[in-house]
Length: 163
Image 1 (cartoon, rainbow, N blue to C red):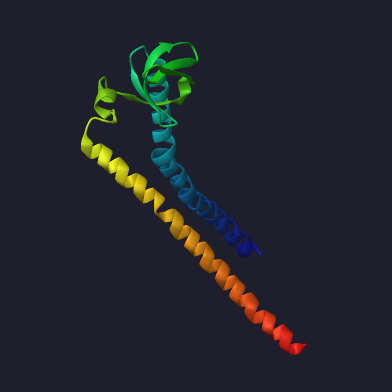
Image 2: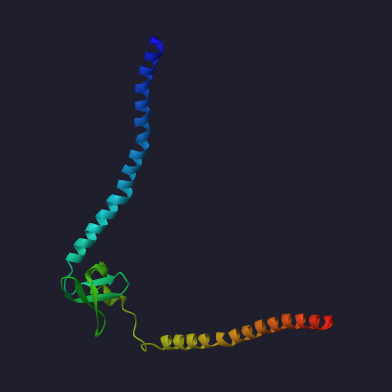
C-alpha cells in the first residue's frame, strides 16, 4: 500500500501541468483577437470621435448616408450641411463619416445639363431606349397568357371527351 500511495502523489503534479498547457491555446486566441480585432477597432473609434469634435464651418464632409456637402453651422449635437445650392439639411454630428480635403466638392460636381450637344443626344437615346422595352414586356405577357390558355384548352377537351 505504501507504494501505491507514493505513485498517486507523483501523478497529481503531472495533471496540473497538463491543465496549464490546455489553457495556453485559449490565452493565445484572446491575444490574437485583441491585436487583430479589438485594438484596431478602438483606434478607429477614437479617430472618428476626434474628427467629429473638430468639425467646423466650411469643412466638406460625407455623411454615413452618402450625401456630400459643406458645413454651414455647427452646434453641440447637430450640423447644418449644404448639399446643393440653397438646399440645407440638419444632421447629427455622429452621422458625419468622412472629412474631405477643401475643394474636393468642386472637383466632384457633375456637369450641368445643356452644356453640350453630346449630352443631349445621349439623353434622347436613353429616353428612346427606355420606351422600347414596354411593348416587349406586353408581348411577353401575351405569350404567357397564351401558354396558360393553351394548357387550359388542353385540359378542356379532355374533360369534354369524358362526358
